[in-house]
Picture 1 (tube, rainbow, N blue to C red):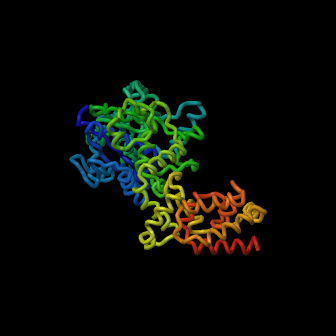
Picture 2 (picture 1 turned 30 degrees about the vertical axis):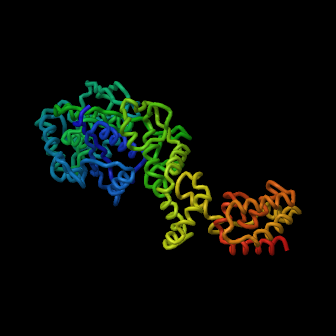
Picture 3 (picture 1 turned 135 degrees about the vertical axis):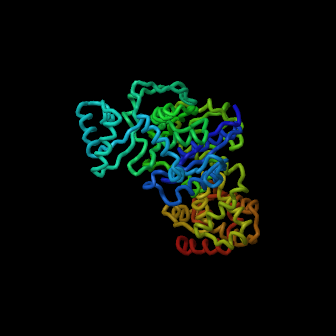
Length: 498
């Protein structure tokens, strides 16, 4: 392996960064960095009708958030620019190659209307034939074909340019992931469009020209691109260019349904932006995505990006479908949260600001209290930072409703005894009482009344927090304002125990 290796991630700005595309970017980045090669970002924006505002910015911002850097891109071009296909088209990079194919008879202009194409497909379906394009200039000389062009042009028709498929040829390659693959020319569906009627090159043509001119040596991409490979190989062959090494990564499937992950699958969040908003850590996303279709040696599953880079081996990319398991992602993110709570503490506090529980000023003035409260609330159990909002809502910032079950605990004979003993003891304790003293006080009530378990703890907890379950009560009491707790207890007494 040498540092001459060049790989690329080529997103379309038609949407936000999808998990599948993030995996493609990650594996190409790992390949480049592991072998000291070059990682290129190229924006494939020729489908202007589908491009969205800030689509390119979103892609690049989220890649940066994931910790992926690049050597060449629209923002830091190298010697093979421009790095946007629309700009490459404006500079006329593709047209000479299309003209060359037309001149050599390897491509031709097609003026068939959409209605004619639809009629052909219907006829093929009726005849139980596989869909394929029917060449309209069969048996014509170059001069006769060009006369037809002039005739169609006179009618005001705009042509597409189609590549003449060598149907008798077999396209073979040794796939980095899947091993030996071969697809016959007859299997690609007939002559395919390399330039649309508006002059824009199609994906399979432009990507081949760009990969050649940018000296891309390896192409790692999703399994759904296998069918594109023979078309691209036809273009490489037509110009006598070296063909890069292709690797087609396994499909990502929904672990719950076994179906291919689809952007229309609303059961799974599929965009990096969504995970950022929920408070997932970039290290966790890298970790999870890096295990989608790639397996390390050994049993460990928690890896940093640097560790992935050092141990990356493209031969360990899996042929089997990769299962997107939401629960596993949550577990991995929890591991990263536990690994460095100090690092994510500002995120957790900011979640409370966004929820309206505290102001930006209180986030600073109450910082130490917030850190303690977040820890007592059970930060170790959350899967992503946004969950801290529900974890902290009660009883730190709001009191919940008292349910019928809670009323039963309070108004039982044991409940009334416990409440009275706790009310007296808590009122007499100083405001700066520590957790150990609170625990000793509750144990003393237990010994005095000979009541233990839920009949002891639940009335106390309900009286002070309106909860049956929650954080460790003695530690929680340290953090609650005593005047607020006394008022809560007085309200409970007046409503249920008067």
